[in-house]
Amino acid sequence: MDRIKEGWISGFVGVLIFSGSLPATRVAVADFDPLFLTLARACIAGLLGAALLLSLRQKRPSRADLPALAIVSLGVVIGFPLLTALALRHITAAHSIVFVGLLPLTTAIFGVMRGGERPQPAFWIFSGLGGCLVAGFSLLQGYSASPAGDLLMLGAILLCGLGYAEGAKLSRRLGGWQVISWALVLSLPAMAPLMLLTWPASLNGIGMPAWLGLAYVSLFSMLIGFVFWYRGLALGGITGVGQLQLLQPFFGLFWSALILHEVVEWTMIAATVAVIGCVVGAKRFANPSDTKTALSLASR
Image (cartoon, rainbow, N blue to C red; front, side, top):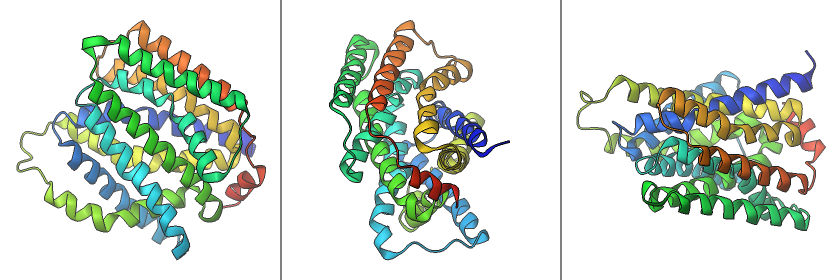
């Protein structure tokens, strides 16, 4: 199998893993406190990441890399998991997944701010249209939706986009999976004591579905998914394989219906398709990815 094809397969697996994160989180917060869930998943993944770095004898990041790793931790280790867990106490997983369609776009926007990229003017037209579609969808839900849940999801997407953009820039020096592993490890000294402080008074009332949800978001969403995702970007190219993330809302809606038995209304599907269309248009008018970056990642 050639490297490009292998990269697309690996990237597809990564997206498939990430698409189960929101449904698994909704299952877990039924019995776990959202704050404890965020801390526990980070600690579990951090211990696994540390074992991976030690077993493969990876070089420690320099002091100059620590601020960027802190931003990655804030975005994808703390911010996105916590805000989505809080949001899913107000809205359904199917509703929240529509917002995930904006994630590639927010990553690109922070790429402009943090990486100095300069997309064409048409990029911002698609960007604004996508934001209006998401806002309009939320308003059309009326009493059945929660403004608090929508705002929490928007905050989660913004922080995750920042974490992805910063991690992509940092991966040019450290490598893809190493970035998420070091970000998890660096967050452990703060996350572990807080996890113990928020430990449930009793574990007797926690059902098996909640435990399985915790296991999924800890092992797959926080670590294993990133291994496949960054490997896919390295082998298949950041620009091409990165577009696979646009499939994530569709997979997420499927998992919500299959696992949670949630009703996926036609308006949710229409909104998801429309948002994805805007993201595709924005991507088309963004600057092409730096091929040197992809080659550097592939060599790691």
